[in-house]
Length: 328
Image (cartoon, rainbow, N blue to C red; front, side):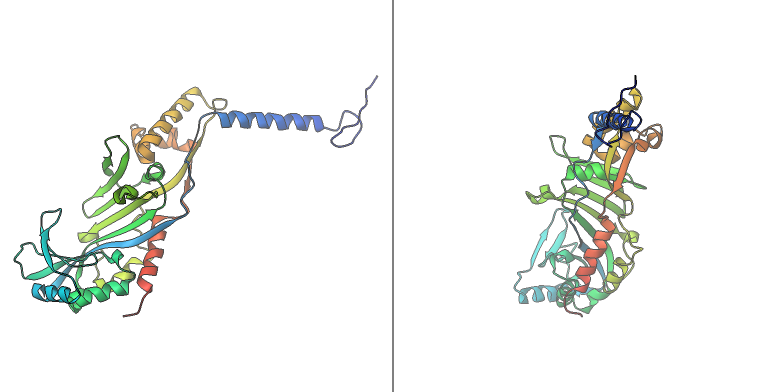
């Protein structure tokens, strides 16, 4: 005797509707998904930050024409600043101005000045910065050679997250800075005339907000070979990408004991431990002794580049800084 029934899902009579097989397959899929979720899974605790700002932080200029010290002191006094000669952290002598402008003396009695240290980031616009520089040094400042330039990008994200998302190509991390507790607070990448510093900006300022800074220092032959008057055009062209050696990506790994060999699960657990403590670059370096990181680890990772790239942030910020204000 054949038992007949009506399927409550599709309404058909008899055993051949196929709904039972579909429900069984659905629960098999859900079971596999729950096993994957409960297994080793690594993910950044944040998506790429949604706020970042860039700036032209420092310019060190070498003027071909010497600026008389007495003229500088007189102009500073006229602007309400008392000229002061002192040594700074490098134990060298400087004449201090205002708004981040300093003049290198070399010797406290030197009367002719060629080297000018400035902070354009202290001004609301490039026009305001140039006007201040001309008021102090005259037109000679516009033909000065650039000895060093510092460009920065600040991300609104904890430094620990920045460290876990940062990888470096074609450069080496030379120095790591950390607190007595062992918590990393900064990295020095590269050497010589082209250096990048990544550090916890909130600790430097004692801020409560999370802020991480990427700063590149270009000096000598690595600095733009233009006068200060031509600098804006050199910095906003698409070809100028000073942070191209940095990759910022969210990191995710899905490894399940149900679908991967035990050795793979253990290897990725080791990567997770290193990643959380030393960041992505540190973990990759530690596990790449046999040059097999790409094969053994990275193919099991999902790396999603941050939507806000440092070079794009810098270019957009510099465009605003150069274009706002009264035209010269």
